[in-house]
Image (cartoon, rainbow, N blue to C red; front, side, top):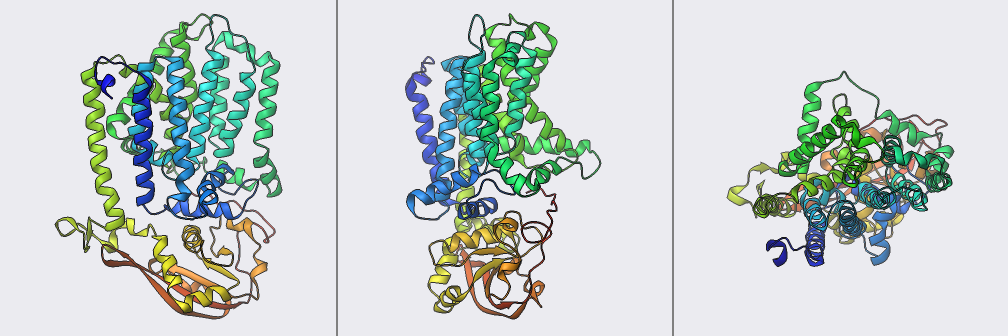
Length: 539
């Protein structure tokens, strides 16, 4: 980083340094922290290949399965290999886009910002979530769109339109949010007079054709299952309460917290300020708009719709922090361009202090998640600990290696696992943890008996387990064995597996042997119940 610090010389190696060091840090985090709830559940996608899934399209199953397929091992690290690689690729694409739209100086700063924003490098670059492939194809679309629409002096549609159709389809195949990306590009072409010619171009027909072909797995699966996934996802946009300005403000502040305030406030500032400048000056929307203004208009159309729509939604229902983040990802381009005009001293202080504070927070969070340094009691507690284990939500992240060892070291549990026709849990996320823990062992199918079944409602029928023996596995804090009374001929506990952190037991997985399922466990929707009702949740 010598030339970065001296005179703003932006050769390639500062970017390489950011990419390599970022990948190493994210890999360390991926090794340290236990699987998240959604991550464990998405691992089960890899065990049930399909055109699509109840919760999301198929791309998250591919990205989650990449590591286990390549290594033959299932761990918190291997299921995240896909995300680690995709995020590195997304950063490269973001860099190339900024060089295309602004300058190399702005591009390096853009990569530096995106590498430091916590929800970006963790939510997109560590955890295996649908957002990882989404942000990769989102970035690829933005790069090709920049090359297509900002050619000077006169615009003529080219083959890149077809590539954009394909990439938007792949973004939709990652997460339904990709639709907003496509609509944003349409909005850009409509408001820029010289780009309206795309609507008359045969390349536009090619783009639509490739888009439809790419998203066909979603259509095929939903057609086969009464459009249940599309109805479920669209139902999440319906208000479930009256509108609250306080909830809206809370949504904005929570999002800024996830972005980290040193980046969250500037990203909101550059978004609103730039949008206001564009709105006040109508010359930004006509054919002879300068290149830099067209670049800004393109970023605004791709980014603002998803930021504003999901932020507004937070006023009438809870939203997940990641929903609006692809928009802020695009806005890093504008923030990087603004920062490139600041003094070197200001930029170094801003990025350096941010990196220091974020690094300190990570240095506290990682040891706590694995060793319990803030837990009370804990053999590794700092100052005796602060958070009682009984109220520490982080203990709900399951160490799958301990569950796996519990089965390997118990002849009784190993024998029961071999004799069972299926293994079941009463929660989709616990079922995911169980599936990961048993991955290296010979085990029967993983099933979930609950009202909220998500993908499990389509991975088997309710009737196929009747007359068969199961193995019920659940953490003690989540145990609800009485709900299965009357469903099995016999139901008895045969073992338990303690989960340790910081030298103390923080949870216990209990194992029940269940003989002869007498009747199908009822389902509200899915295969085998004759209907496809739609749940409306926030997961």
